[in-house]
Length: 341
Ligand code: FE
Image 1 (cartoon, rainbow, N blue to C red):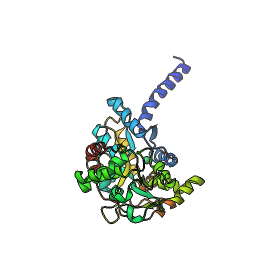
Image 2: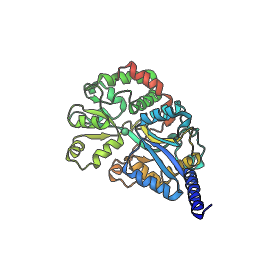
Image 3: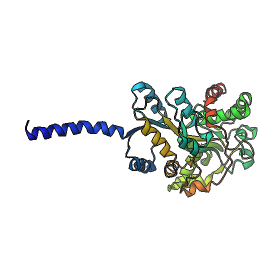
């Protein structure tokens, strides 16, 4: 065998060996996130661990479908999605494998993670009320329950009831009020609609600013995004409306999370757990939460976001996020019964 030929074979052997080794240093991340700060998040992880991240980005529901369809052959190691309702759906689809991690258990508050480690919350958001101060007094919007007050007839705008953000809130109402009272509340909200539910949370805020509605619900980060916007039309929206933390005298404002977990058929389990633990570090928490104007779940993490900070402190509903998931089927039936379309 000539020296050239040996060298060529050696090169082939090396080329064959490399991908195998590279696979050990890889993580397949299925993520519904797509924020500018995520690039810094992922490159910081790769820098500190040497683990490369392959990202599949799609909408929350598409990702769930995709992983289900891939079945046992799914290359997904970690799934990141938003909202308790979707995490509960993924759990019911048996997509997750439980993770036992001292780091995650110590750093993430118990109400923001699954008791058996199926999923973990990495940032939190609040569902808040936006109102038109010209049409509504603050006393009319102090609680989610106020959305059903007869005084608020023809004023309320929401997303469709079957959207995960609404289903999670309805789940919380069922948990706090019981199913019968939650249902009469939901009937009251539907009776108070200014228009049939449509659009996303930002659309509801804009509809309050334009006078089409006087009261709306939004996740906090949509409001902060508008506050941070440089566009004059967004500034006008922020000027025209007011913000309310609901239920400060009662159970506290409804909270939700974005989060994720280890996939059941993950080919790179150890890397996946390392990544989840990394997401709970102070540095990652700051990137992760700030990417979507959310709050870190780890208390020691600092976020440099003056608009978010300007919202101030509030009483958050301490309800376990997993409890919301357990109420999800009842919440779906309830919104169907009351015609919250
Ligand atoms: Fe959202």
